Image (tube, rainbow, N blue to C red; front, side, top):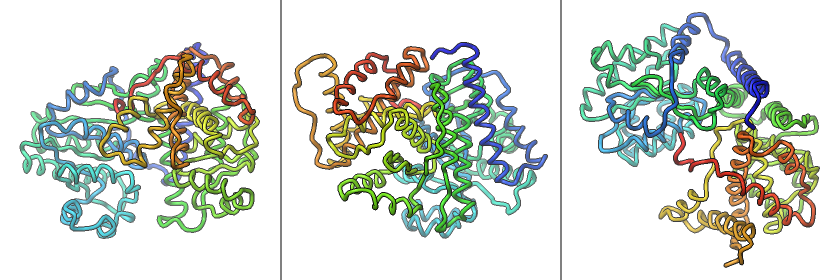
Amino acid sequence: MKETSRELKNWIRIRKELYRQMEAQVRVRLGGEDPELARYRRDYEREFEKTWRPSSRDELFRRLQKARLVLMGDFHALQQSQKSHLRVLKNFLTGRPVVLCLECFEAADQDLLNAFMAGKLSEREFLKSIEWAAKWGFPWDHLRPLIRWAQEKKVPVYGINRIFKKRSVASLKSRDFFAAQKLHQILLQHPEAVVFAIYGDLHLAQDHIPGDVLKLAGPAFRKNLFRIFQNSEKIYFQILRRELESSVDVVELSATSFCLLSVPPWVKWQNYLMYLERTYDLGLDDDEESIDYTDHISGYVKIISEELGSPLSCDDLSVYTAQDTAFWVQVEAHFSPKELKWIETLIEEGSSFYVPSLGIGYLARPTVNHAATLAAKYVHAKWSRTTQNHFDMPRDFLRQIWIEGMAYFGSKIINHKRKTDTVVDLRTALASKGASGTDKEPLMLALSQKMHELMVLTNRPQARPILQPKRKRSYLLASVLLGGMMGERLYAAYRNGLIAKTTLMNFAHKPLGTENFNVLYYEMMEVIESLPAPFRSKKEKM
């Protein structure tokens, strides 16, 4: 929807309020911020007061080839931040050797880290030995893919941190200088390698770790030191005002510094808030209690429904997670063994879903994308007056695709940076030697359904019937893939003014329970497939 000035200002205002609310709640839970720490943070924020220009991943990778030391900022509680590290490293690793340096490991534990990387310590033994939960505490699962990649590529990994019990400006500056000393030593130890260091984003301000490195290596080293920031709130809202948020995910700050934009600010801070709630509210070991995420979902229901001009409250919604034994008690009392089997499949596959017959939602993971998806499924169920459950596959396959598509569209209103697969990605995955038969079945089903839709919509004779998978769960996984493609196309068309709110609301109100839903599905897909395919493969995005 190419907005008028008023609509755009309102769009920005709602999202800025959400961001500020999330950030404020995080700071309250962290105990506030004293003036000295605030000054340390302002050093970082000044980095984004300079003139910047939109850039590209290709330009970023071209510049990186000249670097000897790359410092990449990390937002520890945000998994997307860690995914970006891995994306950059995978693309960056060319003919030059790479050394990886991480803040999350203490330099004092280097012998244990070496043993783990060499396979002499199990993951469990290693984490226990370095006291991961007590000393670092952020999710190891977020870091695991990066570590496995380093093990596979035989990339040396160094710990460059020194933990201080009390967090203060003095301790932060001491940590900065300690990290700079370690980096300088590693640069000398590996003269032919690119040293790639991942450290908390605030530490990347010019007067923090970079300044200390230059004191040790000399001012001439400046041209060899490259910084990659992530998800600056200031730059993001400037991009939003220019309506570039869907097309720009890399900006250049200077010849040797870039910023990646992989999530909006409210997503970044709400993920942090959810992390704090589940980690510190319940303790590191997650006891029997469970957090009520209904407030998070309610906030998203409000934004999604108001965005499309039909506000909803969700006073009748109860949200459960895997820790809630009451969820299974409820569904077991209401569903047949066959229906329970489908609900088990949804849970096992990590899906967040809404059960309209009971008015309850299941949140598989405490992340913004899952919360937004559940909120969108609730909104869609309410607008379409759905009270039935559509668990019967293959009869309900098209309904399931439609539910996932509308949910993906709604979740993009919350996180427009969310990524999905394309048909090209499906074909690439099918051609992959690493994909097993069970991995390929959902991909083959999704591709088969996509080809079937193309034949129907172009009035061409069917060359072959839709694949009949052996495993029922393949219908679920295929519907998520196809729904993502559909939702991505709808969202891009909406933001670019190619489809009206009235059309979207008409789609959202289509009754799922009608006997002729398959006919309705292809009528709606005819409109959707006429819209431009807006997105590249997610493999090409940051």
